[in-house]
Length: 128
Image (cartoon, rainbow, N blue to C red; front, side, top):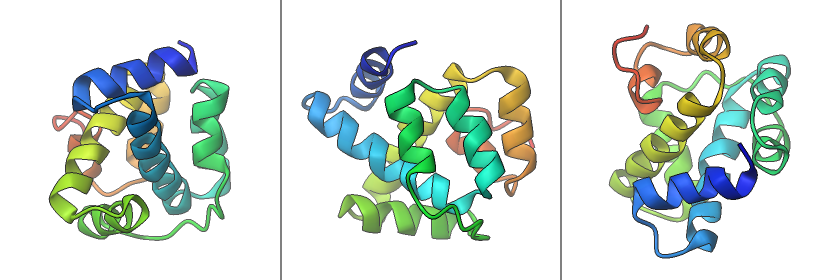
C-alpha cells in the first residue's frame, strides 16, 4: 500500500473533506501513538506502513508513555485541536486503517503492548 492509498482509505472511512484533512488527522493520531510506544515498537510498526505514514510514528520522541485509551484520546484531541469526541473518531478511523495494513502478527504484537481498550480503536475489539 502506498501513502496515497492509505490516506485515501482514511479519507473515505472518515468522510474527510480532502486529502489534506486526512493527512492532518493521520499525523495527529500516529504521532500520538508514536509518543505512546517505546522506540523499538514504533520502529517495527513504521516498517509495515508506507514510508511517509510510518514517519508520523517515528518522528516523535517515542517516550513510551503509559496512557490508557482515554488519555490517548485526550492527547489526540490536543494534537488535532479538536474535541475528544472528534479525536476518538479520528483515532478509530486511522488506527483501523493501520490494523488493516500491517500483518496480523505485528498487530497482535502491538496490541499486546497496549491496554486492552486499544484493540477497539484498531477495529478489533475482540482482540486483547
